[in-house]
Image: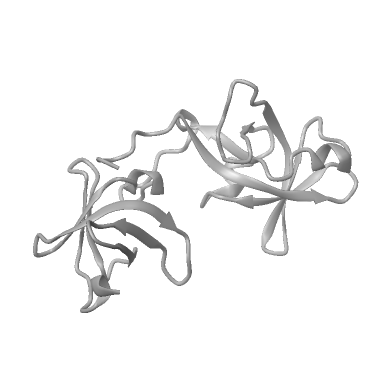
Length: 181
């Protein structure tokens, strides 16, 4: 990975876990901080494949309804009327065009924007490049591939001091021993 990854045409916003009930609802794992905006009734989403990719045969789904259910979300899409039809969506990702995504606040970013960025310490030491972002608790982790090892860096303000998207870098102030793990 030589540098920042180009912006994608589509963003993955959800994953269909399984069918729910007999009337075409699906249990949806939202992959957005704004599920009730993205999946509002009447909105359209693109049906991606099981890898989260959109292709020429990707269809569109119009959201009929959405509701919470035990920490997840149940969604109903127009034209999906039975459990059998809902089962055909199992394991598929849902996407929206980047052009239709609401503007982010100044302090927000998409995780895909971090991929490929250089990571260096506040002292200027090169650590590596961001290869992956893991959504973990209590803090998300950056997987940074260095010349000799892979580092897992908590994506928290205590450690990440600056994210410079234009400059293609992230500046960290790692606690003692973090980069030796």
